[in-house]
Image (cartoon, rainbow, N blue to C red; front, side):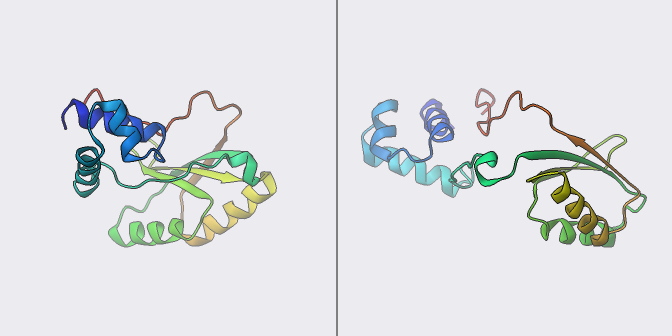
Length: 152
């Protein structure tokens, strides 16, 4: 990626709805070469998708929970069951395998605590877990989908 590609990606991270012409004007290209660069960034996997970001509160998802999971099972079969189980739970919007004392962290969005309790019951039915701890987010202090591009 050169500096123009980085600027194109930066602009698209802010507003994926920009047209090639609008981006071209901002990066100093004509629309056709700019469109080709965008296509190349998509083909190479730098740009993986273009999405609309939704305000959770506007769709009745006012509670965010960070679920910390520990397990005693570390087999491939268990991991496959776990992955299949969490894939069936739409409330999980992010899932990570982590190092340290916690094996997995899930980001979960639900309307309220009652909905979280129902989610929790479905989660523990899906696969055997050793320990599940939940931290409820009280205040969102920073949220971005834009990646820092200085390292690209």
